[in-house]
Length: 131
Image 1 (cartoon, rainbow, N blue to C red):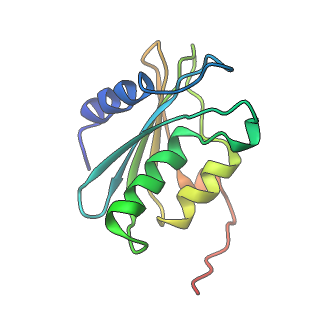
Image 2: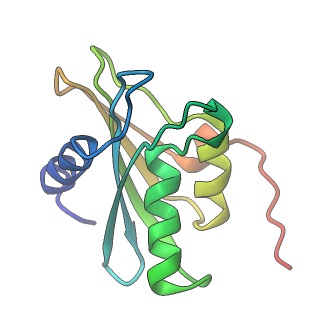
């Protein structure tokens, strides 16, 4: 497993690149894959909120574009500019689960509190469909 402190710094750094003029809520994420590679992402908003992409999905899509569809997630770190850690939204949970089995997601906030959950805790009873 990667050094959590190092990954936290990558996620925090990614949040500084966010395009969040509407929410003023810059989020950063780093995804570690089974190859040991790290991919960071930030949220990118659009005035049409449905077209906004979360930091988690930005990081996952970057990983897929670099490693291909066989890429597997082994660890995720998410930074939010809040007083308490916040877990990924439902859409991000679904995308994360699509590309990993039972990995940990560490969520950190501005007060440096960290909570860690497995993807299976955050998305229980998700189907194991393999096409």
